[in-house]
Amino acid sequence: MISISYEKPNFILSFPYNEEDLRLVRSLSVREWDKKQKVWKVYHLAIKSLEELNNTVWSKEALVAKETINRILSKCIDFQFKKGEARGFLRPYQSAGISYLAFVNRGFLNDEMGLGKTVQVIQTLLDLDCRKSLILCSATLKRNWENEFLKHFNIQPLVITGNAEERKELWNSDNKFLIANYDLLNRDWGIIPKKWDAIICDEVMHLKNHAATRTKLAKKLISKVRIPLSGTLFEKNIFEFHSVLDWAIPGLLPPFYRYKYRYCVFDFNGKVIDYKKDKLTELYTLTAPFILRRTKDKVLTELPPKIYNYVPLDLDEMQKEAYKAIASEFIEWLRKQTGTNWGLNALQKRIKLRQFVEFADIINLKVPNPKLDWLDEMYEATNKMVVFSFFDESIKRLQKHFNTKYYISGSVDADKRVGIIDEFNAEEKAILVSTDAGKYGVNITGADTIVHFGSVDNPATMMQREDRLHRFGQKSIVNVYNPYYVGTIDEGMMKKWQKERDNLKEFEEGTELMAKVNLSRTDFERMIYGN
Image (cartoon, rainbow, N blue to C red; front, side):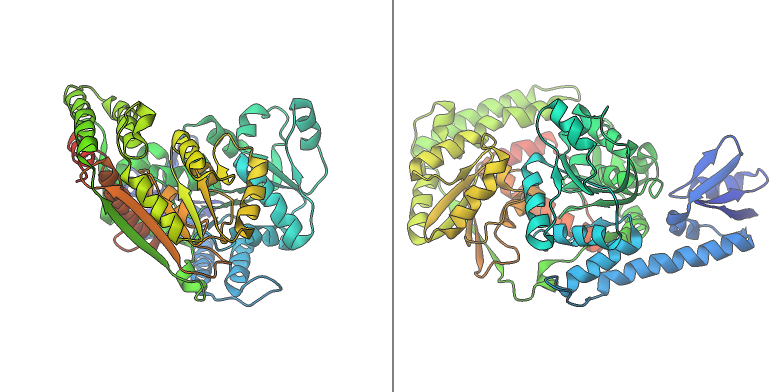
């Protein structure tokens, strides 16, 4: 018989030693052995894991705690279905989101991109009357946060910038709202205050690597309120999901080493090849109360739709011969690889193929470019267009080809990007070209056409590009164009991110969840020829 008592914040499990009860306790999704007290502990917010146990006797205190916590978790779930009421400039769903965040204190605001997560968080901090709040974001988003404070709340936050001495003075400011980029965690750790009332992590996938220094430092900061923000729960795999939740609500999930073996399937070489779907249902049950996600099609019914247009293009004969030579060289190299590290090298070596299908002259090949010819025709037929590429070299060529002053790349200062977008939005006809440096924190609702001139593997990045246009304030149908060369890496990468996008959507909706498979040699070979 397993006895369960309660000592906040843990349920305490004890029993006379026997193999059967030990097996039952060790099968729990969340549990830790306390060597000093010689008892098992389950974090109170992970109470759902205790539902797996039978043959138990609960103390009076434990039963009261169980009832209270289950009531709180049920209320958290209820927020998923609340419509809320209009509040000033805030929409009903935003008002409901603010109530949720204020209730949980540590909740993942996972609203789809373009639904106003920033204003919901700022109003939450004001409602909670937080005396000192830290907003962590990418460098490109710092001014965007500042603008949101000023535009909607007439509040001047403090942006941490300047040299080391200047930053030291700013960190010690008595301003209630400090905005800093993630990189400063490493650079300024010795002078950053360690205690805050609230910490907000925008685009929290910056903390997706549990082993990264910035993630470890973020977890050392102390605060009652912790709110991660992102339009996606993870970018590539559920390891990232663990890292983010472990920052926001430590103790809710098993330690990483146990987490990965509980939910993942590995091959003989130790690579993840699948997920245990029955266990993912358990993961969803554990975490659902702490994740609030609304989608645009549910809450912005007036938002025009987003229409996907896939445009197959054929390589001309000269291109075919050139592509075949590069692809054959890659395949020959791939088949010679041994060991466990070849995958990362393959991702690097295929860059040459990715560059070829955008601008072959990047790799010093002079061949026709039907994709650029198609883009010329699209530009003539479209008033406002935004073109994305992964490569700076492609952006430079597009900027020169269209002779446009509207372009964003990694070399464009983050503080200047909002101004570039504002001016572009005001134009009657224009083209804006951007690397993925422009996928965050900019509102390009002045345009209604987006072109993925080159794809990336990550479906979250593709969606972040699109949702710069497809967001609140957009008045027109957004057309998304994906031109691709048939039978090339263009088509292969497109199919890969489409599949991963569908898997991600399934996980977010808590249905079939997902079934991600790491790239094998065969996957690489098929991708090269668009399969």
